[in-house]
Length: 478
Image (cartoon, rainbow, N blue to C red):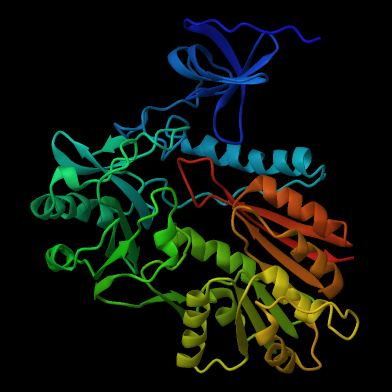
């Protein structure tokens, strides 16, 4: 029977030997793993435990006794308490090394894969890069302000005066936008999660082609008050558009799946890439680092594939991959669950006279069966969600074969049935884009078992000062 380890209740010394995949320093007290917020490998620190379980504990740094040579002073005055960033205390050069190692460790330990990633492509800017941020609203010193959640807490908020990782155009408009909210609303109108009361929930800020766009989320939409806010926000320098969303569900981000209650100013935005453009709306999902996304997309789209007969673009979003590759492939099929994104992709193709792209609004795992396991060989009926699209999709494909597949899934990775259908499709090339090393390793293990071999694993740092990392993997049929 394992002896129960009693951790000190007072701060104690701990030597850190590593950095976790979530950017926590890692040490051991006797035989118990301690994850330390703000600690770095090689450091001796005095730490205070704030959370513990049977096999591990979490602690905060009270004092760094032996600083790492890679430790730097965080420039953000809110960094210690805000959970938005996790790595401002680590030099950016070492952040890049750490993220590449995180990908390697996940491949080795999660996927049991002996694959070495390429050197990471580091960010061009390590601050002022983020083009979208959703700030919960709060009350600070009697005024409406913004905050972010502390690490490991989703009910508390850390008040912020600004944010150093958002683009400068958003920094410049943030406080004027809050001043306007304070003119029209009262502090008592702000939603307080712990009290489950109040109306104002989030201020979302983002840019399209450098122009700020503001979204306000409320529990109860009021036409008159929102009209006043919108008129004043549109008078701020460079602000292109504002929108208002209603969300009565206090636990979920359900507003992201609803149409806006009101849009003022520009309703759609062109997203240029290569010789084409995509069409975005207020809540369209796009990568939050526009400059580095261009490099990632360019890398993914220039992988040497063995055939350019038909490309299947899974989790295609607004279709940037599909539209950009339309001139290279005979036919392209884009699949995306969000019907609004598919509508935007179809509209962009029509506006640019791109006629060889076909977009389907349904889950990737169910759509693939249309092509991978036809009804002639499997009498099990198609899912109702894809049945209306089957005939037209098969007609579009005709006698052609899907030879290349691009997959850019969410953080949860590919649905297991997607991997299964790839085994039935047997494309010559698969390009997998991932924002989560652990789910990347899991998906790669499944794809490799189908007879594929990775020919390149390329990490990109799209998220400086955080533990997140994006990776593009190119696999070929053996």
